[in-house]
Length: 253
Ligand SMILES: [Fe+2]
Image (cartoon, rainbow, N blue to C red):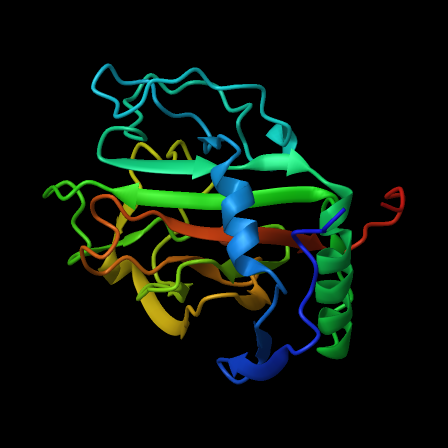
């Protein structure tokens, strides 16, 4: 049977540095059948990312199915009682399923990381994780004065961009204000954060079927929404791969 996640033999890799010290890479032509990856994802219903769809005004109040990745994505947080806007002013959805077919992609990214001098392993080498996002054209989405949810990940993160027309990519920031993460603030309650709290260090540029891999633990980062390109009926879509440092005592995965 065809593996939709088969790797392209004709990839090209370009390396760079953020702030002259943190290596990142672009891997172009990542999948052999990127159109089929998209078709596959379109045939599987994504879930609301984290809590979502709780408003009566939601664009889609479909019930959430069980989240396979609760421990990794803070969905066990206690409710704050504040309004969650996912499904109202924006829709932030995520595929989360397991497939052995994704193993070669994780192994390849792992090897690329080793080549960059980074010894990290996949958080879960069978996890297929997407980000699917669009937003409503509304003053609430004030991208002129704010950045979308700068956050940190567990370690190196890879994103494979799957839009053939994309002007966003991923911004990498230096956080200039006290870090609100871990405080009582949730992404989908206050996703837009004031620009003056961040210095933009780098934009990882999007390209269809391009993987970017960078240190998501060292740097705050987030999608670069700066105009109405994804306001309306076009969904920004990528696949995400998370890595972390193997801790003593961790079972090999
Ligand atoms: Fe991230």
